[in-house]
Image (cartoon, rainbow, N blue to C red; front, side, top):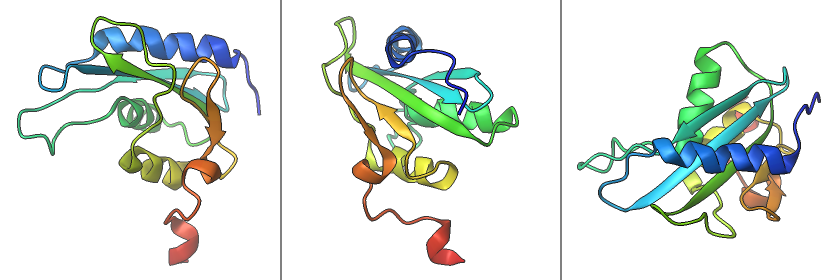
Length: 136
């Protein structure tokens, strides 16, 4: 792993990414900063839709942008969220759908930072995840 920035720096990038959130329905802005094994950071923000199902989370925006750019190895992601215009909540873990997407592209020891002092691994947040090991 080539971790070029600290967990704190990655989390602060997630906080900054919240500014790009489009959240007129929930009022909850979420930002994500994804660190790749190559040392690049991809950010994302949640984008809501009045139909709700097309809404996409910040974590998935970051992942899909990185994947579209050719990245396939990931080290960590930081997630920051809370009421729009207010500081991020002390802890804001990713939703189940985002955890499932992470399980497709990340190892079980993938680090998930969801607060200035809150973090876990993918295995801890998704202990019985459905992944390609079940299919093969």
